[in-house]
Image (cartoon, rainbow, N blue to C red; front, top):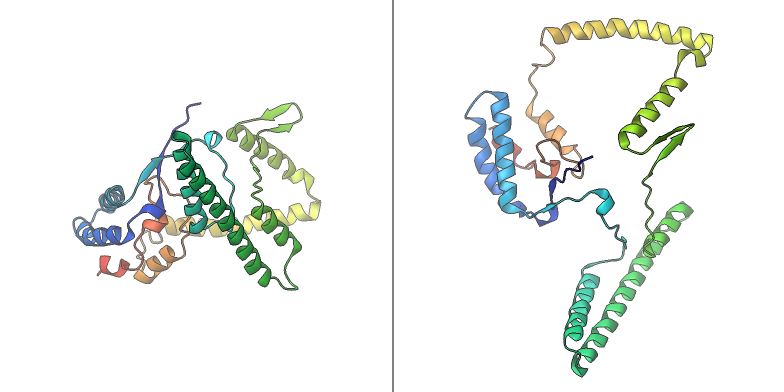
Length: 264
């Protein structure tokens, strides 16, 4: 199976001020060019994609198997990062030129890094303990303690076995799950009263679906106009950290604050 590597965006490196200014200058012009919805959509995607290339850094994605799982420490901050960076620079300098001054400087920065990490961990743990009360669950405390120790569990299932079948790929796992779910959900497994009630409900819903289908056939529901506040609410309620679609545009890149000027 060929693995397709898709370049993805590092949203923390985007110059959002420059991105927002450029997009807001171009969008009103694009929306007034043509009334064709498909052409308008392609122009919007093109503007956002080109602007992202200018205002952000891109790096190539890697398959999951080649990714190194890093320990996530909740108390890690910029002070710890800078201290480790200075320590590593001093270590590299010492390895290239092992003089007494370089060795002494490396030892000094190593001690500073250890003290900085220790103080940061103690401060974080103290602040977390101040938030505990009688309603705090013990499981959340244990999870925090494991995170403090850098314990990360890899919950990715490698393979699933059922009788004489072994599913390794995602498609095989999905097919195996579908077959078992279909076997469990058969009507023969349900009692008689439940099957009768299910048949009555299906008949009632079938009539409602036919009415809805007749409405869609006339194009009334699909072609109904939406208001500006409905668009703003849909964008506002979207999840910024969700995966992007085929256009590779995440919700975080949609300018929500100045959407009014696009349709003015």
